Length: 106
Image (tube, rainbow, N blue to C red):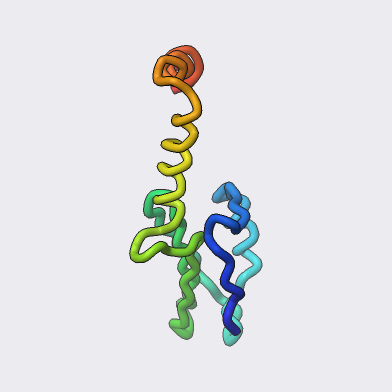
């Protein structure tokens, strides 16, 4: 069944912690034999989860976000949001926040 097409900029976005996602995926199992292995790969902001069965060798892959062309949408939207947010403050304010708040945390 095809999923409804929602423009990427109108979709809700979430931050997901890996431990929480792993807990959810622990409920997944192979429909034929009940076994499943979970592998993950991170490509920038994209999380790719592969569920595979060691017994019957079935495999399914899930991506945490859609693609824009050949690039994960989040890998375009994240720098765009930073760039557009910076357009609302001066570079002096940006560097002041970076010096007083961001760098001490790092």
